[in-house]
Image (cartoon, rainbow, N blue to C red; front, top):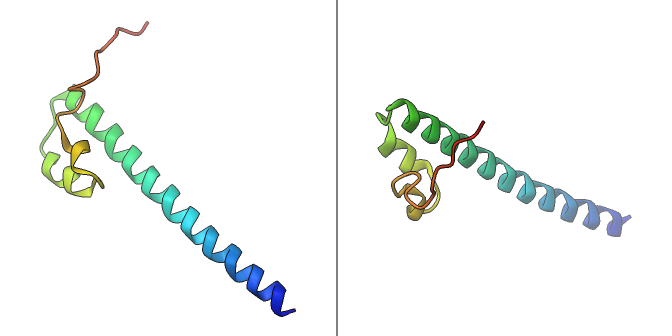
Length: 73
């Protein structure tokens, strides 16, 4: 029974870690989506706040600076 409890605790800890990773990824994808769509509409009012929410400074670089746009039909 002690082994079962230990295994359950490990699984809970792994689940919590996985959940945090998914939440971070989801938050960053929402921010990037908002930023991309905001840039298209000329709305960069909250760019500084968004940058502070993103985990790494290089993601605060000018959006699309390294991406060439291709028209989609």
